[in-house]
Amino acid sequence: MLPVLVGSSDGASGHRREHADAVEYQFDVLESIGREPGRKYVFAHVLVPHPPFVFGEDGTYAPDEATFESQLADTNRRIRAFVEPLVSLPEAERPIIIIQGDEGPYRERFRDDRDGFDWATASDAELLAKIGILNAMYLPGPEGDAPLRSGMTAVNTYPELFRRYFGSDVADRPDRVMASNQSHPFDLLDVTVRLEAAASN
Image 1 (cartoon, rainbow, N blue to C red):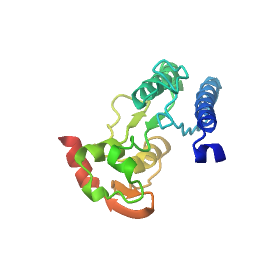
Image 2: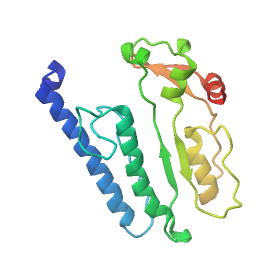
Image 3: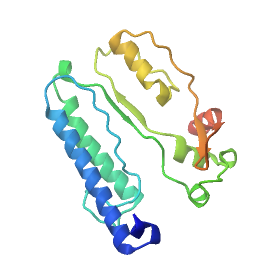
């Protein structure tokens, strides 16, 4: 850890290589699990396109040239390669698939002041980039099933699935989106209305 803290290039290089190896391992394990027969619940938190940026668009290890955009393109390519065989299975064997982002990229003003950034002063672009996450679902079943309701936030992903597939009567939680900074993570600012307005513009 010390070389990374003091800025040693060897330490930073080692950290980038470890990050790349961990991502490769996670996708390898996901692929192997996808080939296993039988029902299963699989949860994977893969730290890409999160920094450090180490992958080119084609997945090559290129820490000196990689950018957020190249790592995002590679991440999208890897996810498609994992998902496409699953949705090509016979209909009765297709799994529920949820792909979510936990946060967007750090914008410049936030990177400069992670501890003190005031989300009340964030622009629409800053809100959308950091908090407007991807929430994509593949829900196998009859085409006539009710579509997902507009404005559903990630907190209600599982209540929705439990009702649709497992006969649960679990209720939705309020669809609210909160923001905070690193020094006061529980000092939450409700940005739901602003985020909805920014997304509709």
